[in-house]
Image (cartoon, rainbow, N blue to C red; front, side, top):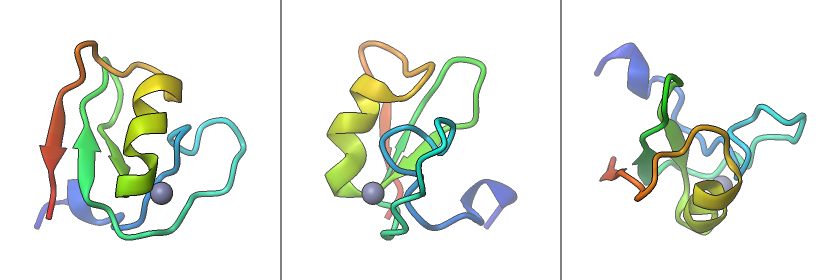
Length: 66
Ligand SMILES: [Zn+2]
């Protein structure tokens, strides 16, 4: 595994950039973002993160991580 997958807990609907605590659930999806690290989220936060996180591509590019 590369460093990209080292953080294996959900970054929450805001990508951990808005001062909210990370969710901490296991990561299932990776959302591609413009000029940012991909956003790694759990199933619960996949939908919200597409709408709320900064830099999410549209239409969304989602990768199933595991
Ligand atoms: Zn989550």
